[in-house]
Length: 254
Image (cartoon, rainbow, N blue to C red; front, side):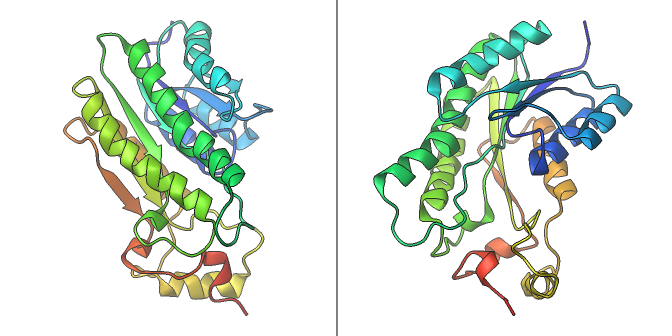
């Protein structure tokens, strides 16, 4: 059996979650990777984990299905033969085209995945630890500081997770530390043009966008920050200091 600590990272087979998983593997963790349906990690992630000597397995779980959510931690324990000591709630639901005030279905869909599922996973994680110690890191969004007019259901669900971070930190202390990372625009989609990204970069107080490695490094730090709990670390180029009226994709366009 591996002597390395085990981390469970949701939404970790691709994009930002994959970068977080890779950094944790290189920091000495074995990885339980997660995807909502087809749990096939990107090849570059597998190569980095194997080069780091990190053991890994992939798990599929629909975070909108609470029965499946509650079964995920026991499934990970069954596969690895031990409980994770780190939980990273990275997976999110995000409807990019959502405008105006959301209806009930949109609110419920976002809250199930972005707020309720992370709390249920934190509960299962804490129970599985028994008398042991562990850490939870929730991935938020810099928009919680100054909410834009777009994607309100998503924003509200991330604000709820931010408050859950502070509340769980108190409820689960002293055995479990609960912190969060709030990234800015980190992995732009194809909806952004090159000139637009250059102007957005210049608009940030630090004149740079957050990179996946920046966010991953913050997660690794909080995983080991034994004197910190209930904290949110903004990794956003300073975006959280400004009040952007719209989602970034609508700003600085040609």
